Amino acid sequence: MEEQYKVTMEIESPDQYMAIFGLKDENMELLRGELGVEIYAHGSEITITGEKAELCREVLERLRDIVARGDRIDRTRIRYAIELAAEGNADRIAEIMRDVIAITYRGRQVKCKTMGQKTYVDAIRKNTCTFAIGPAGTGKTYLAVALAVVALKNKEIEKIILTRPAVEAGEKLGFLPGDLAQKVDPYLRPLYDAINDMMGTEAYQKLLERGAVEVAPLAYMRGRTLNDAFIILDEAQNTTSEQMKMFLTRMGMGSKMVITGDVTQIDLPAGKKSGLVEALDVLKGVDDIAIVTLSHKDVVRHELVQAIVKAYEKHDKQEPRTPSVPRFRTPVR
Image (cartoon, rainbow, N blue to C red; front, side):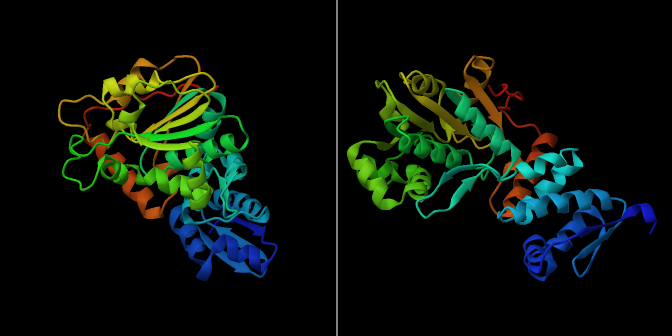
């Protein structure tokens, strides 16, 4: 191996080594496989050889900084750090998980784990209305709920409203047992889970009784004007054009809206146009409306989810789907 492909770096302690390379050096194997390098440890010194040795060292040094400030890394974060470095954005690796967005009722810090997520959070903070388009697992709903809870605690708003269309096989709810509330409950469960994780069941129930939190199907929004509220529309790809227009025009004074969806998972009946796809085209360039597109790089669930989403994205490029998503991003203001 030629000398120019050999670099070294220092790891400060055994704990830091374990945090970076993982149990039984599993993360070391990941780096070897992704970058085609060899990594050897001699006490506190790490030697890296291979054509991408310098890139590997840069990634490891940035990961070392993340670990040093007390944050944990995993295989998904390591792969993301490698991608950033390969794109020439190694200096941005340190930004991963830097800012605390919220703290759950159990004391866990909620942080952005990708640059796409940071762009999304910044967009919500700076704009009255934000659209987030991306696959499952990118944190679209959870981060919006986290920001809504913070806004409620800071008394920036008076109410959190979480809603989504009750759509599956064409909004046919009759086959489900129970009254209307029980019928739509399964559709709203992901929203319950997100807000319970942030607040805890007891605090959530108290706010629900007080009317400070509302979780309801989209049909319940008709005819209302929503003032001083943080309103989140989830699974917006399953709205019709009429439903989306109805929802967007519910906004009142002092309110903020977040609309999330995945245009590759539209469950509307054949021939029905997605209100989300239409809104992305109609509202592009409108002041105070941000459109953020997330990708497989922003998936923060199990690493296999990222691989699945990436495989589907590759497949979709080979066989274009209908309808297609407009490829644009409104600048975050």
